[in-house]
Image 1 (cartoon, rainbow, N blue to C red):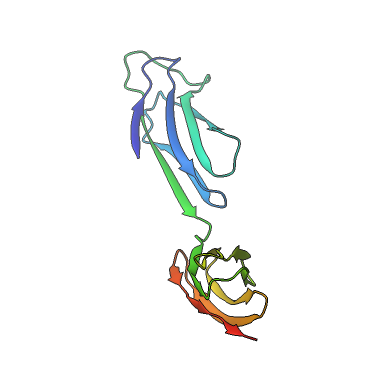
Image 2 (cartoon, helix red, strand yellow):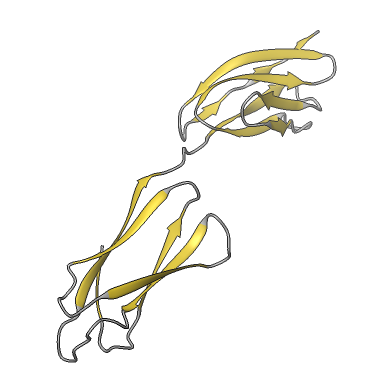
Length: 159
């Protein structure tokens, strides 16, 4: 919540905020002085879905701005619900091999052939995780919560 006011009929206030794709937001202007009728224009910085946005709030051309009156108002940005935040499954593949760790949900991650590390972002839920590497076999079942980080080391067995 922010408090603002218009000092004259050409005054405008700018508010900067971050929005995430998939969420439902509302910008509310309330506790408005009786002589104040604000308009709101929304702008994004880079024409992307996630990122910095700006709201320009200014007196409506139809409002009867009166010099010397407070013309106060408050602005509130709220989110009603948003997208699920992905979790992360990461770990070491032992032995380190050239290959790919895959899931039936979010995709795949290359295994670093020197260190054996892999990282896969994943939406909340249950999924299969397996390794595709010549001469090796591995498959398991993983359950991950929203924004949860799970270390899952993989010990490969020869076929």
